[in-house]
Length: 196
Length: 70
Image (cartoon, rainbow over all chains, first blue to last red; front, side, top):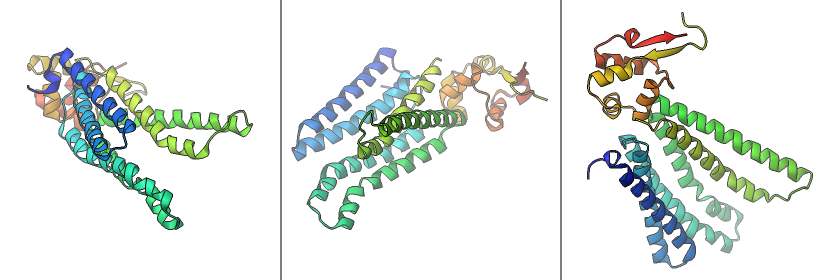
């Protein structure tokens, strides 16, 4: 088989598409079923999809997978799995609890794997080479600017009651929005340097 | 002395090709990404001093590879 970055272009893009299909299919399966066994299969499928996507994304950018990428996968995939299990099976228990402190602990339980993933990402960036660190810094800056501007615009519109904003939902969406813009900015930056 | 806004031109691509190395092969030797080598070669990124010591791989001095461009 050889290294994926040495495969033919169509093979690399094929692997990337396969990863996307695997991931999206697993997410759909997770949302569509409440059967525990099916959900576990879907979660494993999501992890497999992420694994294929990590390798193939590097390959379509003509980049090899380095030890830091393998380390990141080894750390983040289990943490992601724990996060999903906690969200699916621990957080719903909060509805049946009456003691506020216990309810708070249960509801905040997904924070542990998220904090672990944040630590892993910080360590990963620290182990990247100097140009990659600059790419990550630029992407983080773009993400902060975009998300804070959107939040400010929503806040101004809500202040004059032109729109109604669900505060809890907005607070929950800040981290995913930051991750999304950060990821897009990183991809754009890497795409510019893909040529050999 | 370098003026503000002065960029560096370099002979990395020329020397790399003279040694018969691909960008990936050079990147592996320096433990950096291939894109970093590509960005240096195309002038989109000026390396820091530690990375500029790649000159040793080519058996050359840093100043013979990286020169100011006004």
